[in-house]
Amino acid sequence: MKDSSPAGMRWTIRLLSVVLFFLFIWLLGFIIGDINDLQRPNHQSFYDAGVDAELTRAQEEFNASLEGIRVDKARQDGIKQNRSQAMEVARDTWAQAQKVNQFELTAGRLPSDELREELDQAHERYISAQATFEEANTKAANLSAQEYAIRQNLVTLESQVQPQREEAYALYSAADKDHEHTLAIYKLSFIIPVFLLAAWALAKKRESIYRPILKALILASFLQVGVVMFEHFDAEYFKYIALTVAVLIVLGFLVRLLQSSARPRPDLLLKQRRESYHRNTCPECTYSYPDDHGNEFTCPACGTGLFANCNSCGGSRHNLLPFCIHCGSEEAAPAVSV
Ligand SMILES: [Zn+2]
Ligand SMILES: [Zn+2]
Image (cartoon, rainbow, N blue to C red; front, top):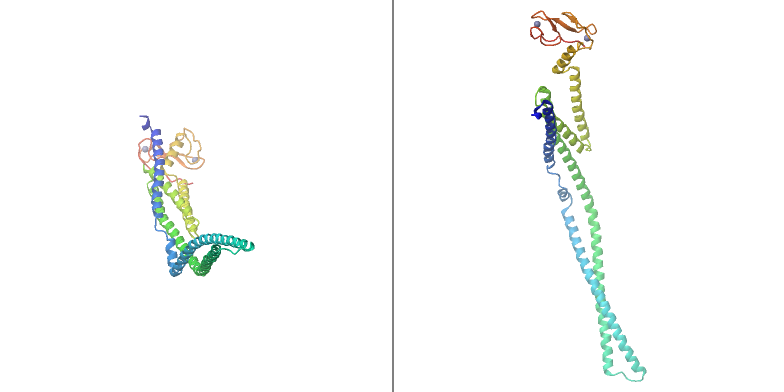
């Protein structure tokens, strides 16, 4: 099958490693998200504890009274308007009756009893309408006075409650900040060990065929370390801790890289030596040596012993490769001084 060819296989492994990398990010993200669900400080409970309950209750009662007064005032305004209209009607009726009465008097006639009765009644009605209007007016004025007094009380109460509320808010903010720090510490104490364990396993098992899995885990956890740091970066002291951790991680990587470039991995070193011998060049300095080198040959450019007599068969063997080309006996390559 074409897919099982080495190149196809390699690409399949790469693709699956990338998929695994994203799955690891997802999984680690879920766990970190669960840490986020830890109980946050409750805003209201700080106010409940810090603000005098008596004062709060008094405020609520005053506000309820204000609302009642508002409704009463609206009703009283309606009544006032009605009574004002009724009063005007009564005054017009009375004025009309007076005019008729005056007309009779001017004409030299004595107004009839009926007319006098009507005049008296109109006058009485007007007087009574005026009284009810004034009553409504007084009630409205009383309500306004009550409203003013309650508002004054509320201002006094607020001046007592305000400092308590501010103090409660300050306590809440401090608790919230602490909570953020705790979250960051929990998250990092989960994700950093995951990262370090994966890095340690990879360093331990350099030849393991499972390296792609470890690499995916290392990259995913490193990314999550970065995300956690970014989220909590602005917290006052935390940024120093986070930066120190980041520096340590990057330094660790760098040191490993530097070490492995100074001391090449055995398999890479062997590969490099094998290819150099194949091209007739010195593995250490790439000097091209002649085909007709003797049994023993030292690179004239850098002094590395390239060929030597085999300790087992006496034939000429590649000094920097592990096995004799003639008898197959194994000998450790001499340390090369750089
Ligand atoms: Zn050389
Ligand atoms: Zn040999």
